[in-house]
Image 1 (cartoon, rainbow, N blue to C red):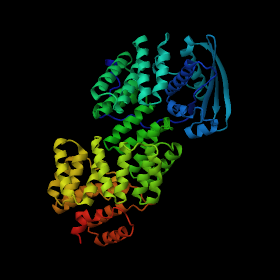
Image 2: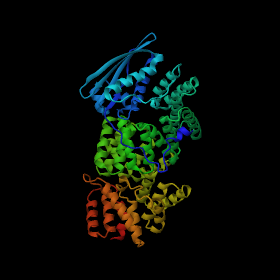
Image 3: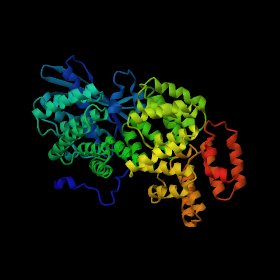
Image 4: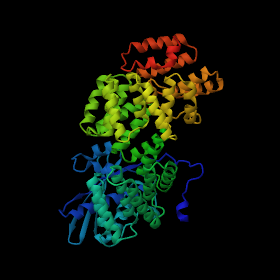
Length: 583
């Protein structure tokens, strides 16, 4: 166990450096197979994957992930086009043939910008020599791109069985797991279980059992407790065999994350990244952990690193765009959403994300195009679609439909910040705010540590004009972290929790509290890059800030401008206590 703690993070839990040298860069494409034997296809994919992994052990070389490289299989695209999409300077492609017990691999290393072959090599070997072959190919690449680099560190190589069928079962399992459906995840687990039966100390196969078990849990195919027990046992066995296996620590972080054990998840992800700073799966999921804790700028750093390594990842493309939007970097957010939609036109999250972007900048004519594109990919009972459709219904003034859809979300176990905020606006428009406030109070008693519930309850007390009830709740969530929920997409609704606090402090003649809130609010608003956009909700927040700072004439001017924008949620102005009290 001592070996595990060698890389244990310090008390400060400092994040591993987000700066990875990205030059030169290479993509290893799936090898062509000139044989009908199914096992040879699995073998060829495994060979490509292991070359990718061995190259990632070299920090001076940026290597595109398997997911992205393999996305171009059978697409018929030329090397230059593929390299451009993967942002890669070099491409490795090859083919494999089998004759009896002999295998022949032909490899070409290509400079993508010119399409010229740097070299072409032929490797003849038997299946028992595959591990040496992987190293020989990798070292040939390194010698060409980084001639001063001595060798791949032995401690960074992944350990596979040298004999038997365990390796082939592992490769078949990987091919099935890549499909990421319930059916194939079950089949993948069977292959990995066979691999560990044949080779009990096969750490990578144990990790793969854990990862695919978590996929089944996320699909709600197996119960929570059962999934946790299976995954934890598999991770424990993998770490017992290889305490320095970064993927095992990443799996441990994912397991903790699934069960909302955030400090433990952070420790596991940091350990994984200390062991392998280029592991995109660790970067993406550490980013998601930070995102869940409203640390969006830090999350963005890790999402961007993950995207550089895995540029075809749908979820990471969306995560980068969404994080740019939340942090108010609107020009970059729009470019990334457009890139995601163009790159992955069948991925609904990016369509919903860009629809939300256009919704907030009050360009409804562009919203519906992307809503329809997303709808083609999602079932009617998909919770993400229901949430998006509810938001859209509220925006179009169909409050009854919005309310009905929100009630469906509740039956699916929904109830995050966005859903609670939407319910607040729905009940405000339906004039059923008092009933909703009672429901929120009951929810807060059940979940007293849920920050989203407490924050929205504080917002509802504020809308009711009750600062005495609102402020203790706001302070319990925001006092030590003024940036929490200081998101652009919250302000774009016309809501600012910090402005609400400043208003209540001003009413209570608490100058120290008022000054702190206004300072934090000013810094927050200055971060938003909104020069090229007209955002009605943000104009409303700015008008409120003007009132708080005694600039009544400027506030009236902003409200007059606001009234001309034909914003569907213009009625929010009427539920803001500060505007009614300033008349």
